[in-house]
Length: 226
Image 1 (cartoon, one colour):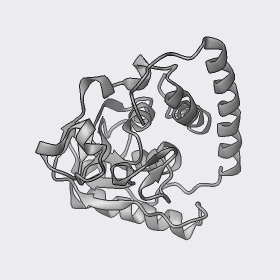
Image 2: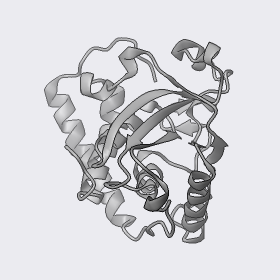
Image 3: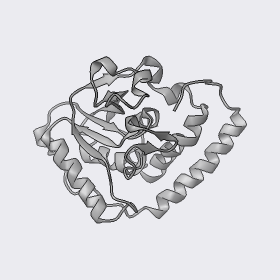
């Protein structure tokens, strides 16, 4: 992805693109409607107050927008995980040599949305978990599929759902999502935060991210927050 030339498309082109891509998203969703619910979750009795989860899977613009539209999610921040603080800079991370992945930190209320529900959206809407270092037009280790787990419970539940999805052959390929201990999350530059809200006509967003939001709303209407 690139933030060069943030010139909005015309409203006509944008609206036609949304109609086309929404149709694609709805068709894809119908054909994949028999997805299993996560079998296990983190017990609500073991957590108190708001919780956080860190996910990576391609450009953080779309990932951020997907989780922001979930009921029970109170905050989503775009940033970097996997490397150190000194290299947590977009231009440096874009080299693919820092160990960082573009990530989002999701703050949520476990009394309203569970960790396994976040996992369901992460795997089934937010990105393609069968692609390790490639999502859409973006390639490189900074776009890898990874869950940065904060504790053993998050790791256990995430691994169980990966195993469940693989066993059910939900995807044509095996899931390659990495489970990695969270050692640090570093917030990205201000212009990356809520990028889609500020740049809804940006061509990259129209082509790659708006279909995800359409898919989320169509397939999980009870979870969708406007």
